[in-house]
Amino acid sequence: IEDAAGTLVPLSAVLAAQCASLASGARVTSTKFEVRRLITGRPIDAALGVIAFCNVPEEEVWAGMSEGVAAIEREFHQHGTDADRKCLQYVLHGRTGDLAHYKWPNGFMDEGRPAGLALADFCTDASAQLAGLRPHHVAALRLYTSAAFRSINGHLREQEKSDESGQHQPVYPFPVTLSFIADGLRRLRAVAATRKDANEAIDVWRGMRNVESDTDFYAKGGTELAPMSGTTSLTVAVQYALGHAQGDTAQALMFKIVARSFIDRGADLGFLSCFPGEAEWCYPPLTYLS
Image (tube, rainbow, N blue to C red; front, side, top):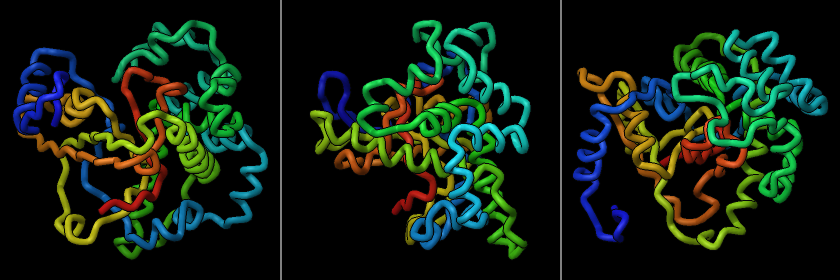
């Protein structure tokens, strides 16, 4: 890859240097950019879409989507964890700085942003306006960038494991929230289309810890079930690949996604992310990879 001076450097050398520089530093224990096992769905899952995979009648999801933010609130009050509901309260009804005293595994929420910003302020951001995001899109996306992503992603992977084992596939508990996330991420490609580098290649990195790779994936490809978080920062990806297991026998896997134009990059969530320093790019759920 190119270094800061534009010189081509072997990726192995860059990764070795990154690992060495992180050896004595803080360790990141979040799992947004990692999975414990390389779980991918069938290509047909990508074709059929989010609602079909959730195993929820389409009419119920459409009715819920008509309720907007209220449906997100209901889903997480009914099925979320205490941490999810803490994040929900902050995203929907709090302001930046309200949780400045509370440190999450990957840092402080909205660190570096001006204090006092509410959900409505993120909705009026130029990127949100250009993409046509409504409050329910912004709320769902901000919630995904918080610790609530664990519940959103974890239940999706349970769907696939149940399907593989022949068990009755469970009902996914957050279908409306997931639908808003997927729609919002697709809309945000409109923002990427206006960038000067819209048609230039960009490297997006994804670091995974304690992964069992599946040889079928390399031969046939697979569908990433959950919203797929990546980062343009190699340092951040290495941090997540090493996690708190650095120094033991943990196995790390790095994906380099070569995004040849804006349509391949996913969405830049920096303007609304609860952790803007992560330089996060996010792909919709059920993205097909090959």
